[in-house]
Length: 104
Image 1 (cartoon, rainbow, N blue to C red):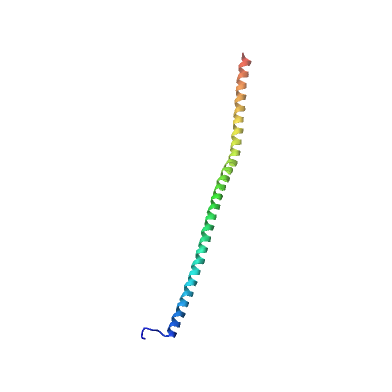
Image 2: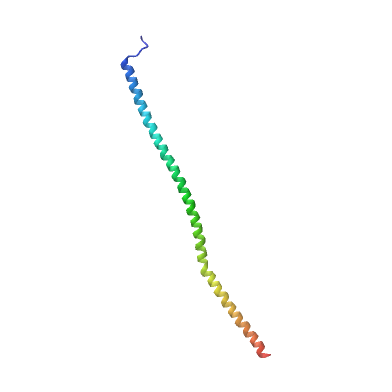
């Protein structure tokens, strides 16, 4: 009979095992909740990365549009400059032709 344990010892063992199971279940729930939070975070990071890609594309588009807008005054000025040069050249050329015809 030395190998047998008393009912009180058995009940104490059962109580300790139940407490251990409760502790392990609580830890498992904590890990499951943390895993769910991590999955949600990963999903949100993916969405944020996609949104950032769209923002980068939009910024490129706006940068190109801004560059074209900044070039407009320069292009206009160059057009005016070429017009003035052409007018001066035409005036000088006309004066030369008129002088040649006048002296002939």
